[in-house]
Image (cartoon, rainbow, N blue to C red; front, top):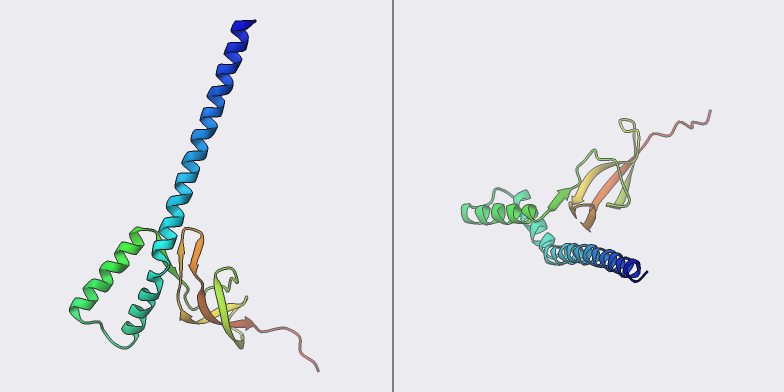
Length: 143
């Protein structure tokens, strides 16, 4: 009996250790994700300013190189820009600034204009895309 009890104790300790190890690994990954999010979130404003500068004309050589390097670095850390005209509107990742009416060319509520792009890290939204949307034409007409 004593041997069986010791064997059960050992098995229980091994299971507890494996659970502890999994929990520590999961916590470590969560801390890494949160640190990456906290570090990259403020940089989205800098990236937005770079985009606004591009809208006013081509960037100068030195500034263009720095902007491209910054974009490569944040992309390497998992920051992805999203939001384009024609995307289906998704309220979980888009902020609708305005409704532009109806459009016969769309079948679902659709992004017509992107006022400010959005950024994600994996499935986590860092900055929601600010958009103007159109709805499909409704079929109800009164005669």
